[in-house]
Image (tube, rainbow, N blue to C red; front, top):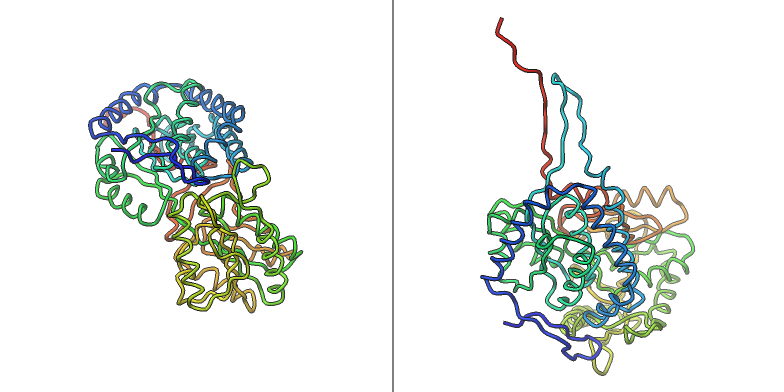
Length: 462
């Protein structure tokens, strides 16, 4: 059965397709991963770090080629794809360079023994269920720390991103990763529950929708498997002051990056009354000027969305909002012609009776809200079931930091939004999921933190 295909979202043409694995092939892959685990877990930390370092180098070398694959699969502008490949290189290099420190035992107070310490041991075979919007970065967040730990990995890519996932597997092979330690599984979503149920699979990490997360969490819970979920977001961006023109320009770039298809994109912009009109004018001008077009063209700011289905789902939210009284200041329509292109859009006057109030707008649409003061801005920001990240913008750093600390999110920023770095933890709360990736926290999820306690021999009873 063919479920994986590259369908260029700029043209709608199918470039290549792959057949899904059947149950027998999936079983063989799990066998291979289990067998590889017995040897990979015993390799030295130095050996594992060497593979990660070589992988980082390959991503740096081939960034432009990798970006071209992403552009053809899901529409990411090449310049943004190059930046993604470079970030992946930084992630692999981060774990390679800090391997000894990250894998070192934690020495505890003796507490009546000769020694007490906690050591990090791998769990075994892990399943990663990955999305399409960052076809290399999302995978690297899962792969790099878990290879360092000594786990072996089965990775299910999104159905539209087989080519990038298979290319990443080739790079790992070229970097010297032993056979079976990392395998790309082209399986249908209906097969995931059976893979999780296999006793040899010890944990699962998913980045994706709320529905997919709930399904995977239910299957993992049923079989007592560790799970990490990074789901959707409706991130607030609160403007309290500062250079409003500059803040609006930065907010526009952040919202339009990856055609707005990022979980931690600033989707709800909340501006205190004093600066609202200036911000809206500047934001509207910036989005109106954004070049929507071919992702292979260096002049393009916004490529196509991942598919026409994704664009049409976004338009349903926009049309629903307009039908209930919201105002479109810029854009608001699909672009005519072939491909999954959407105009950069600014919506205002969105209210609670509209789907756009509570649902994630996963595309190049910015919603702007007016707030009377800081307290109302925070209340609006926290009026969501999501809790991935949020930001506060002001030249009053004391006020901005105090406000950021009031946000119910996993990542709070002041005068920046959505910053992703190898050394920073990534994850949210609420319906945005649980668990953390990247940074030192990335090796603290799928790991057996084994206590080793040594005491003197027991002597003869007195």
